[in-house]
Length: 417
Image (cartoon, rainbow, N blue to C red; front, side):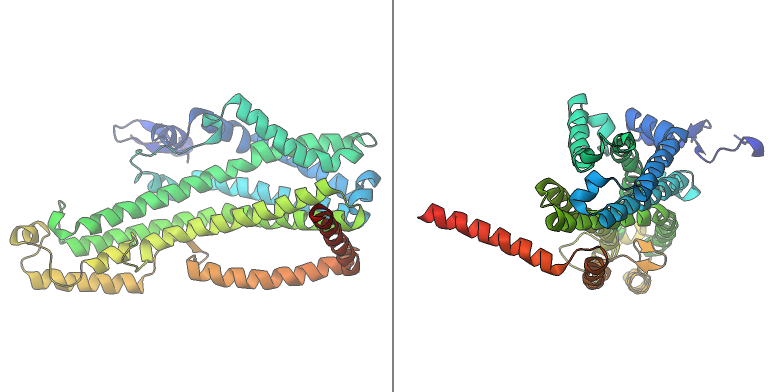
């Protein structure tokens, strides 16, 4: 059915039966989104209410940066209070960019094409369709305490900080997960696409039911798969990178809050909250990179005990596994021709490294290892800068840690006596 140019909607695709099918409906029909999650994405995260909530959150974070509260400054220090509020402002902007990028991905032709390869056999677990009211309440309470207790010294003197707590709570619980759903979708669809290619190669030419010569068809399918992965992940990087940047920013917030609380006020809860933010965001950052590298591993791993396109292709080396009837099904007239096409296919795979790319750079385990080493060096330099510019003196930290060690040693000594 032809669609008029003025009526074209980028979130609509053609159904095989001839009817227009909304991308949201297709995601729900293939069990990639539940009805509650779909409504939440459509009508809050990627709609005007979510944008207004994010802008209001950004406004109060800027206010807190320009007008630090004395009660909070007594706990963390005035300069640190301004820096933490400024980092929250930066994290809010980063989250808004990620939501915008996620919305653009769902409207893209590449995502619709990628969606066609999903058979709908797997149901993704989305919290707004799976968690109960009590689980949502516990999540609100947990995040409310983590955000509210460090801000509580300002509630009585400045009501804006109470509003900031409520806006941040809604932002963290309801807005930020919005762009993690499209990230999970493109990751799942990429795995499904690669999985289909792996299954064809694992079955081999003797089980081929298509037309044409098997290894030449596999080359064409791999080229199409590589092009689709590259296009989809190039679009996805516009919200994956802000997503990863948020992990870094929130981890730095935790580091600054933890160190300043230890030196300034010895507030155990603020120090614990900061330490929790550091650990949670380092783990999240590493997990997200590992998931992207996992798609590349499914394409390029050469280990015999790993399921990958390349390892299965290598496994078909040596004598041809095809019988005379299998050769005919695979489209070949002789074993020599089939072996020659297989050798060319292996050469092609080794030359064309497929997987998840970030602006032309392939994300694999080797890249992650190099990045971790360089990030560790950069972190130590950043730590030195913060200690020098945020009124956190190393002498004070050493005194605090020495005092803590003496305290615990006295306890152990008394218990042993």
